[in-house]
Amino acid sequence: MLSCRLGPGAMVTSIERIAYPRFKRLISAHEVYLLFAPTRDEAAWAAERTDSDSHQLALLLALKSYQRMGRFPRAEEYSDSVVDFTRRAVELGEEAELPALAEKASKDHRSLVRRLLQARYAPDQARKVAETAIRETAAVKNRPVDLINIALEKVVETGLEIPEFSTLDRTAARIRAEVNGSIFDRPHERMGTFGRDRMTELLERRPSDHHRAKPLFSRLRYVS
Image 1 (spheres, rainbow, N blue to C red):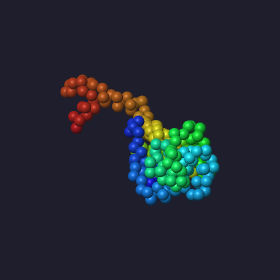
Image 2 (cartoon, rainbow, N blue to C red):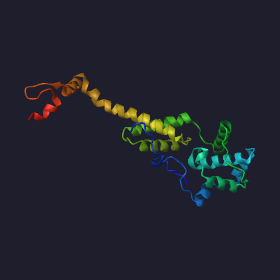
Image 3 (cartoon, rainbow, N blue to C red):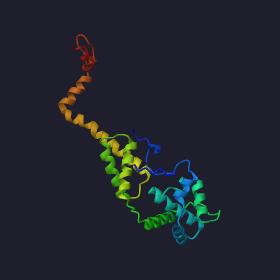
Image 4 (cartoon, one colour):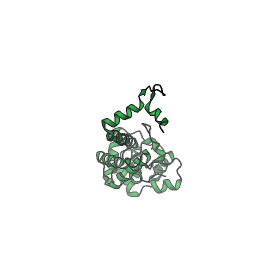
């Protein structure tokens, strides 16, 4: 049902290769039952805190998703089979649909779920954990996939809510560029002014008796 393994350039990293928790494309009825069947207490909890069947459905989906994924999916991420199963599990009518919640209602639902599950919502702290993990890993690994997976593992270990995938992807791209730039700059700095001048001279065209206007670098092969 869910991918829950927590584990160049400005191109967006393919989420298919990342251990980011998300819905599978193909979902079996058994997986839906195991992961989205609400308990009686959960159903009662949602009913007491909402004023319509549609909002009750949305709150239950948010609760069950967070329990399994550590994050709140967007409405468009839910498949019809998941929505239909959850609706029938608590005996809501067919008219109960997953609504396009206003920002305030969506925030209220997330707050209710976090309070119930005693979840730690500290986005700034989660980003710092991810940044530290990515920076440490970027010194030995270069693939964005590896950087994001390590960041996910570290965030989950802290019990914090997982940041949006786009946040992790941008962070990995930025830090990867910074670390790579630092690595590439080291030889340049170690050469010093004299060494850099000598390297520049290798590329300058200088005429000679046997080799007209060729860079010294090209003429080195003639030296025996």
